[in-house]
Length: 356
Image 1 (cartoon, rainbow, N blue to C red):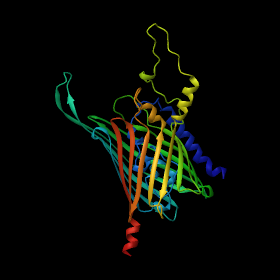
Image 2 (image 1 turned 90 degrees about the horizontal axis):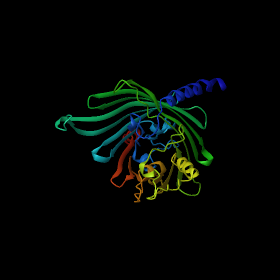
Image 3 (image 1 turned 60 degrees about the vertical axis):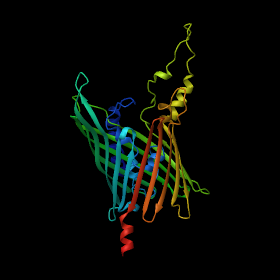
Image 4 (image 1 turned 120 degrees about the vertical axis):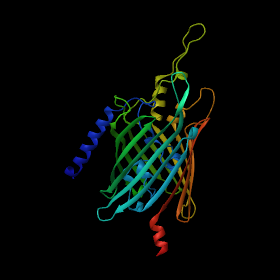
């Protein structure tokens, strides 16, 4: 047993230290950030990340490559988001299960288009237009190695184009998912978006959007409800950023204001790593679902000093019509910036069964 696990964990730790060396502080200093956007409406409604669940939703394979199982065979899903200022973001994925080897494969395309921009010279005169877009193509593979433990890995090729500046790279995911069936519990660990640039925008190398995530979800026994707690950015304790509104100021007579208790800052920083989400299952066959989540990091970073904007709250709904699953997710980012996402999913094998 030791010999079987040693290569896996040796590779995992090696990739982790490689990724850790390329990580900088938060605040938009990493490239390929669209890789961390929620791929499906369900994920958006559950706070942005959901690595600790496996229930036949093929979109979860992007969140954790270990969540792929045989029920994803011939599953198909299309996702599209309407973001701010006309930004279009989408994700399409397909699954296939290899019966002989027990490996489940999923392939997908993720894209984002930022629209067209005016090109100007040093005097501010418009000389033309340029566009900006990014795309990622890749696949994941997962296998259940024991009754309760599944492991998975993913690889993606990324191309980012901003006017004449182009960068390409390879990103890798490693994930583990542990299930306790009697307790209806899933526990997960994911190393997300490790990798390197193959070509750069400039001569300097930019850091990858690496994230170390873990999560736990539990389905209640006597209530059709599942709650989840997801932790992100676990490789870095302090994920605060320099907010001018939070800086201490002085009174008119020169006396400094009393600084905040460092214990409060530590507690606040701790909760910035966490996302709390819940999902209600309604109907005789649980064909209708209600979702909600709270992301404390978004709530703090998007908050206004004197106005309550309810940032960090997300909601969603999902329902099944015949052979199709339709989901809608809403994310509250700011007073003038909300995210809306739609997902339509199906399974090709169900159409084959009806024809036969």
